[in-house]
Length: 91
Image (spheres, rainbow, N blue to C red):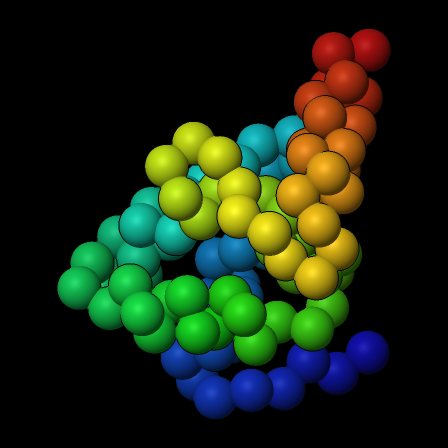
Protein backbone atom coordinates (compact mmCIF):
# COMPACT_ATOMS: atom_id res chain seq x y z
CA UNK A 1 0.00 0.00 0.00
CA UNK A 2 1.31 3.42 -0.92
CA UNK A 3 0.74 6.21 1.58
CA UNK A 4 1.03 9.66 0.06
CA UNK A 5 0.79 13.18 1.38
CA UNK A 6 2.81 16.35 1.81
CA UNK A 7 6.16 16.15 3.59
CA UNK A 8 4.55 17.52 6.73
CA UNK A 9 1.66 15.03 6.66
CA UNK A 10 4.11 12.17 6.16
CA UNK A 11 6.22 13.32 9.14
CA UNK A 12 3.18 13.52 11.42
CA UNK A 13 1.87 10.14 10.29
CA UNK A 14 5.33 8.59 10.77
CA UNK A 15 5.37 9.85 14.37
CA UNK A 16 1.90 8.45 14.97
CA UNK A 17 3.01 5.06 13.61
CA UNK A 18 5.93 5.09 16.07
CA UNK A 19 3.60 5.08 19.06
CA UNK A 20 4.04 1.68 20.65
CA UNK A 21 1.27 -0.89 20.77
CA UNK A 22 -0.83 -0.37 23.89
CA UNK A 23 0.36 3.20 24.44
CA UNK A 24 -0.99 6.61 23.54
CA UNK A 25 0.24 10.18 23.21
CA UNK A 26 -1.33 13.61 23.16
CA UNK A 27 -1.21 15.74 20.01
CA UNK A 28 1.03 18.17 21.87
CA UNK A 29 3.57 15.40 22.45
CA UNK A 30 3.62 14.67 18.72
CA UNK A 31 4.25 18.38 18.05
CA UNK A 32 7.25 18.37 20.42
CA UNK A 33 8.65 15.19 18.87
CA UNK A 34 8.58 16.99 15.51
CA UNK A 35 10.26 20.05 17.10
CA UNK A 36 7.18 22.09 16.15
CA UNK A 37 5.46 22.87 19.47
CA UNK A 38 3.66 25.91 18.06
CA UNK A 39 1.83 24.25 15.18
CA UNK A 40 -0.88 22.35 17.02
CA UNK A 41 -3.50 23.26 14.41
CA UNK A 42 -1.34 21.80 11.66
CA UNK A 43 -0.71 18.64 13.68
CA UNK A 44 -4.45 18.33 14.25
CA UNK A 45 -5.06 18.85 10.52
CA UNK A 46 -2.62 16.04 9.66
CA UNK A 47 -4.24 13.84 12.29
CA UNK A 48 -7.65 14.40 10.69
CA UNK A 49 -6.39 13.87 7.12
CA UNK A 50 -5.30 10.33 8.02
CA UNK A 51 -7.74 7.95 6.34
CA UNK A 52 -5.85 4.79 7.31
CA UNK A 53 -7.02 4.77 10.90
CA UNK A 54 -5.68 1.32 11.76
CA UNK A 55 -2.40 1.43 9.80
CA UNK A 56 -1.68 4.92 11.09
CA UNK A 57 -3.37 4.39 14.46
CA UNK A 58 -5.35 7.53 15.20
CA UNK A 59 -6.86 5.80 18.20
CA UNK A 60 -3.46 5.97 19.95
CA UNK A 61 -3.75 9.76 20.07
CA UNK A 62 -5.54 11.41 22.98
CA UNK A 63 -6.53 14.74 21.50
CA UNK A 64 -7.76 16.60 24.57
CA UNK A 65 -5.99 16.06 27.87
CA UNK A 66 -6.13 12.41 28.88
CA UNK A 67 -9.33 11.57 27.05
CA UNK A 68 -10.50 11.24 23.48
CA UNK A 69 -12.86 13.29 21.42
CA UNK A 70 -15.26 11.74 18.96
CA UNK A 71 -14.09 10.57 15.56
CA UNK A 72 -16.17 8.97 12.85
CA UNK A 73 -15.98 5.64 14.67
CA UNK A 74 -17.14 7.07 17.98
CA UNK A 75 -15.43 7.39 21.33
CA UNK A 76 -16.53 3.89 22.38
CA UNK A 77 -14.61 2.35 19.46
CA UNK A 78 -11.44 4.32 20.24
CA UNK A 79 -11.68 3.26 23.88
CA UNK A 80 -12.29 -0.36 22.88
CA UNK A 81 -9.17 -0.41 20.65
CA UNK A 82 -7.01 1.17 23.36
CA UNK A 83 -8.31 -1.24 26.01
CA UNK A 84 -7.83 -4.21 23.65
CA UNK A 85 -4.17 -3.33 23.11
CA UNK A 86 -3.55 -2.79 26.83
CA UNK A 87 -5.15 -6.15 27.70
CA UNK A 88 -2.98 -7.92 25.12
CA UNK A 89 0.15 -6.35 26.60
CA UNK A 90 -0.75 -7.66 30.04
CA UNK A 91 -1.31 -11.25 28.91
